[in-house]
Image (tube, rainbow, N blue to C red; front, side, top):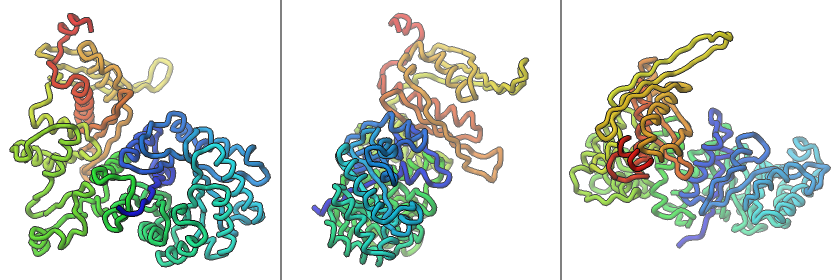
Length: 541
């Protein structure tokens, strides 16, 4: 077993600074839980007091079983004591077990950006770390612009991190804040620092402005650091942060280090990467190292022949170790292992040689070709798989639906938009029809369905739609484009994602909505007989 490397994820803070990324508090909670399930050691939740989203997130933190939630802030202001600094108070307010505090370590930034004397900057670092250490289990000190500072004034940059170390910081994280340092410089500088501060107390935080964030992070590990910071898929300001999705398998599979991620969880890496992209409503990078669709893709000719004889010819690791798969374009021979792994995940025993498995795989490929994406819609995939094996009852059957949208000015001169949905369904062989209004067509459909289903399935009362995302798959078709709809649902204890695809956005929405309802009922009732309103009244529901 190799030496232990601690993984620190800053997707929820650094990643939120990505242009075009706007996490909700709900997004942040779900991503934090996913990072925890993966085996990440530290999850940086954001900056308490900086914005309403972070405040809402820290006010209702998700329960984590492995990771330590970390709040982020900066050192005390000049002229204030640590006890009387509002920023430090806000940092401690969420009562997370770990806190991260950033401080200047470049003399230029201390004197120009902060406008303080160099000695005062050292006191700000030392006093802030000491104060935070009296209230939290661990203090992480982010040495901002450390590599630039070290190149400009090695003695002062070292004084800064020694001040934090002597004040009790658990981790001293060396930051390449503008991403301008190259791997050979990282190796040289970290090697010198490790002579002053033990490597098991050092971390690395790199940005990707020269395309070297992953290389710099791995170089720092080789030089002695034992904490690595980064973000999922390399999200971050400007060119992004170090990509943990690339760093993790390199550390484990290439360099032999131990992390908090088990071999089984490592197989979820591709799924985690793609699920984040789906949450951000963007296509996964097909050429991403390790997890991209093309990462283990082989076209016809000599490559295919060589791979079939010995995969090591053109594959640097086994794709299934990180949850990816080999894709031979001309023969398309891949995917069975992924399907079987998903069966195991939701507790379904199946014979790998069952013809239904191959049939399901063909169905998944055809659906993905037509626009479905199951990496971010596990609930829809589970339903698809269980239906292929005849294990999902038909809780209700749609006969037809109609949605009418109205936009008008009312008597008060106010602009009003209203949706009305009429649905006809059968439940247990009994027909029902209802009409409902809603704030938009999806809400109207949801309301109409609930009017019919709640008397038979009262557990649906706890289900709410948390998020709704639309993506245009064929933009060249303009208003006639194929649309993919992703719906996130929750019932107070669990969250799940479902997907629908159609050239009609309302039809796509209904497909995702129906999967959401079916998934909840399957989890609540299993394969119990379908209810009817008459039976529900007899049962007193």
